[in-house]
Length: 197
Image (cartoon, rainbow, N blue to C red; front, side, top):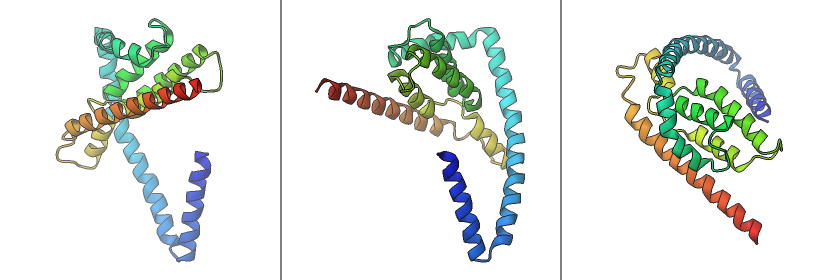
């Protein structure tokens, strides 16, 4: 579905540019955008490699295990259907830890693995379970202590103080996570009430 939306937007843009005689500007924008995308990617790779290396050192030092232990009581309350020592819980904790450090690219594989394990717990059904919906909400809105990706983008564009967004990002992501959990619980309990009626 998303591919159709993107294709529709591209076609509308091309048709609009052709009607208004702005095809030269469209071509220039396409090539400038491609060049800028490559530059951003290279800049992001350097920062992500640094933070992933730091995460590896933290993992070897046992810091991530300590953080996972701190997050485990929260995760077991958010995901009551998941047994505490099930592989899904390990992947969920890894996903939450990576998101805390703003490593969305590193968190994604863990989230996918967690979803696969949650599907196994759900009996292989194609409908999403309560835990799958909760993981999607928490992963999307996740609290971020260090917004690594945004900091690297700000550094690439010559920001005077690329880390000044840390405080506001922490507050904003805390609010979004609380909101996501509240909405998730509201719809879950509403569905239960409807099932009883």
